[in-house]
Each structure stands twice: as structure tokens, then as C-alpha cells.
Length: 326
Image (cartoon, rainbow, N blue to C red; front, side):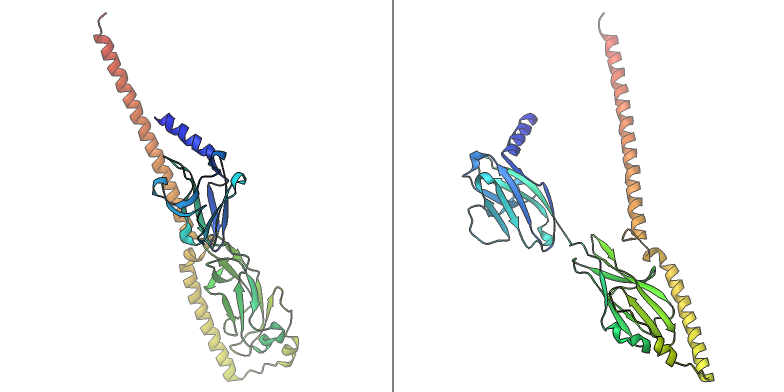
């Protein structure tokens, strides 16, 4: 019976063959499936249906239908059968069938469709106000935006070197946030990919709570300096100013200490490996190792049972041979 079923399936597969058994496409996109079939079915109706099994398959479109649908099936005769699906959505993922209407039993072949996010492209950085105006030379704030031209479901994260700053597409720089020379970068990611931007270099020429002087350097943006501003700026501290600066320094030191403590506490969660959090990667590999151990135990138990069963059968045969008449 099994042999007949295999022969039937082989015969059916020769009568209808498609160029793909699995299709991976992006959300909002489209795909085209090309199938060839035997000449005896040139005038038979062909259809495109969805269902986990061939017996529970819901027909979405057939070659004789004129209705407009995101699914389109075109029977080009000896050139083949073409199935096209457009405007793909996540819920379009599943098992589909290409079928040929036939008396008693249709000829059918299955195709698995997987819809994913569009991979993100390398994010680009640009200031929301022109750097050519040199506003940072007068201590004014600058907002830098991170954006990818391609990708769906994108998440943006800003880093100060390897320290996580914020989950946002915009980074705001001002006198209170830039205290020393640093490099910043942005990471754009979704469920299937992640990309890192170029670096933003911030050079602090004169730190202060306000009226600081700093330079922002972004690739592709105008290069400038604040040399003339530094020459015309003279610092004449008074006892009140010196006290205020000391107070600010202590406050900043305390804030930095708190920030370092928080960083050490959450280091395990903020570090990433291959675009994934370190704790998640360790959990995944631990789970994989556990599965391997369980599999080895099952195989060993199965082998032991098989050996015991073989020994029992051997003993039974020996006993039977003893009782046989000579």
C-alpha cells in the first residue's frame, strides 16, 4: 500500500512542478511562482488555494476567474502556469497549493510562504539645523537625526561609545550633555537585521553649563571650527563663579558615579552580541545545549532497551531449541 502511495505521489509530482517549494518575501512586496504541467491538462482549470493540508484548502483564485485580487493566476499553456501575489502582509505566511482540477483526484503541489520585515539599510546621520551656522560655537544645542532609507519596523538606539544612551531616532547635544570629547553612533535594527551608522565626533573646546564651545563633526556635513570664538572669549572667574563651577563639578561627579553604578548593574543587559542582548544569547545557547544532552540520553536509553530486548529474544530461542525433539 505504501508503495502504491509513493508511486502515486511521484506520478503527480511529474505532472505538476513549480520552481520553488519555499518562498521568503518582504512585507509590502510581491512574489511570482512559475509552474510546469503535463500537456494533458492544457484545458483543465488551475487554482491557487491556502491550507495546511490538501483536503482543507481554501481556493483564493483560479485561472477562469476574472475577479480582481491580490492573488493572480495566469495559465499560459505550454509556457507554464504563473502565480503572482502582491502587497504582501505578515498574515500571508502559511502553506499554499497550486492545483489542477481533475476528476476523482486533483493534481496538487504545496508551497510554503514566509513574510518578513524588510532588512534595514545603513542609517544616515544629519543635523536638523545647519552646522555651517556654527551655532555650537556659541553653546547652542544641536539635534542629530538617524534614519535608514530602507527597512520596516525599524528601532533606533543611540550609543556613547559602548554605553547605551537612549531609544530614539534623535540625539540632542547641548552644554549639559557634552563635557568632554566623545564619539557617538546610532544603531538601526528590526527583527531580522541591524546596521550601525558612522561616528559623530564631538570636540569640547570649553566646557560649561551654558555658553560652552564645542564642535560637531559628521561625515558629509560642513567642517568648521570655533577658533575665532575662542580668541574673542576670555574667562574672568569671580569667587562666585568659581564656587558655582566647583558645585557643578561635584554634582557632575556624583551624577557620573551614579551613572557608572547603573551601567555596571545593567551591563549584562545592555551589551549586545551579533545584534542580540548578551543574556538572550546565553539563554539561547543554554537551551540548545540542554536539548543536545536530552537527545543523547534518549539515544542511550533506546540503545540499552534494544540490547536488552535482543538478549531476551536470544534466551527464548535457546530455551525453545532445548525443548525441540532430537
